[in-house]
Length: 78
Image 1 (cartoon, rainbow, N blue to C red):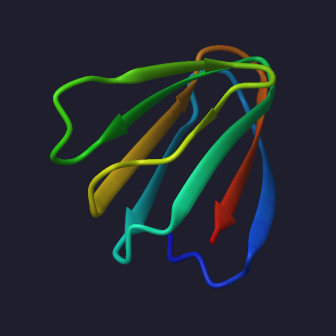
Image 2 (cartoon, rainbow, N blue to C red):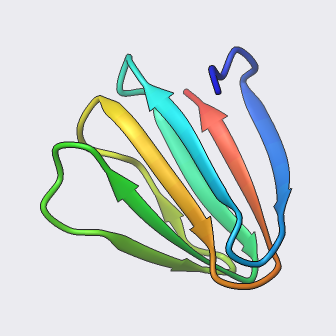
């Protein structure tokens, strides 16, 4: 998925995967509800976000988000 809007809210079903390209290193991910697991290409660690937590990938490349249950995330292009 290519992100061309400044901010988008996505509702994810349990175990649903979302793959995004962070080509300009300008993405921020905020978990609004539930728990999501975030994996970023080029980073050594994965990140678990719970409601209210936000993460900004440190590298460009693919970002994969997996909902561990029903979840809602905001994806923002800064």
